[in-house]
Image 1 (cartoon, rainbow, N blue to C red):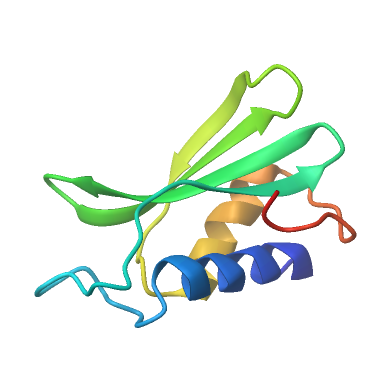
Image 2 (image 1 turned 180 degrees about the vertical axis):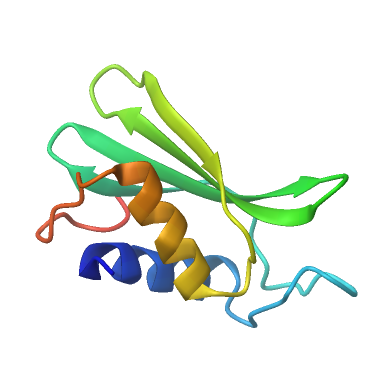
Length: 107
């Protein structure tokens, strides 16, 4: 597992879902579905949010973008909004080896 993917996932869960709500029952006040942006490398950034899908419930949504043009490079839903490990897997998959260790999180 890429250390940078784990770092981003842990930071995102801590900011957006600190109570580790699993998506069932009443949504807690500390749950945040807004987009957070993280640096991937010099030319790429990753937007992560939680999105509600009628069939699947709450899912992490990752969008890889060109930092300079804003062009969408890839989009991917993950699984489990309460698991840093699951989110890290999705981050690693969408970034396809682009993760730089020295990038700062969120921009």
